[in-house]
Length: 531
Image (tube, rainbow, N blue to C red):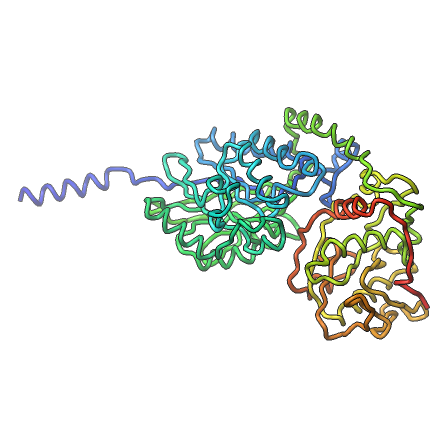
């Protein structure tokens, strides 16, 4: 009888005591800021001050800081748990990076107060040394579990495989992985090794689980497609906060690539585009066993309704001063004027088109790329004879486009050229400037009806001109706008293989080409002819 009473009392007490409440965590995140310290236009390029004043600009780290502070302060005031994560690629993309090589990004990330950051491939653009210098300037952990740093005396010990954050009395594990083709898309050097992303994440999840951590988030820089594969393959992940593919996931923005979050099996995956334009907020709800019972949220557009953080805006203005000096830096000398006139370059071969296409091809010639194509709409100015300044290069190429490389069949190159000459009469920007290739187009043929015949297209191979083979796969370089279908080049977006859109800035490529040449002589060589 006494045992029965004791058991009954235990049961009654169990019902009387309140059940342990669910645990919720708000994850504020950004990715692929790419040094957009200053506000950007709707095209993700630098936005002039007068346009910002008129409410036409987006983002910039002063807005990122203001939005994150407002969200974090609100959540904390409401007694909610919150962390702030960055999924990599703070480096590369503006003169702020060119000038300060990561120091500006470190300063503003510290001011914002991130809890952890993944390594992006562009963090290696200036070698392991620049990444090490960045890490030394920040107090938050930088993570990437699939890097083999055992041979690096620069980074070994500076980057964590995984970290544990204490938030609201609970342990939150952060694991990470970086795209394994970083040695092709950036400059990690021979001492940095890469391990399979999925196997590495499985090992790090197992290590954290063995420590009793039952809430684990993957902070990755591998792209959405790989994130979805990871979510389906790696058990024990509660969410994936990603970057690298610059994907906009949203429940409210038109044109988004998918819902926020997108589900990889039972694992929620989020990403918030790029270039400081959005901040994502993911709310995760866990049961007592650490299982996710709810995942919801959205990305937030940082438009003119978000007032920039005043103190950070003041710091940005101070850093921008020396950049004006950079614009006066002489990068070359031209023996004659380099014509980039709109009514010339959009109708025929032009000297500026040859310079830009030649520079693009020269930059990637060691990667098996033999053809360059650039849209004339991306050429916005001419350059006078005499000294060439960085400011003049930026006037020609103001859009902060990046180099894009890919592989495609010869027949589709002909189709691309056909698109390029399809609107010459309207002086449209799709007219192609090329290198490593020459062709003839027939103005007597109707638009889209075969103005470019395959037999007129020649490609340079081993220093000699050869007919283009419609069935052969060619390596091509263009800019990220064209590669993603801009100016009607849809075949590059739909049919390109092994595409990589995040190469160096086009303005930097041209400036470096001019520096190497010293005295530049603009020229035409008949690579584009018209019947």
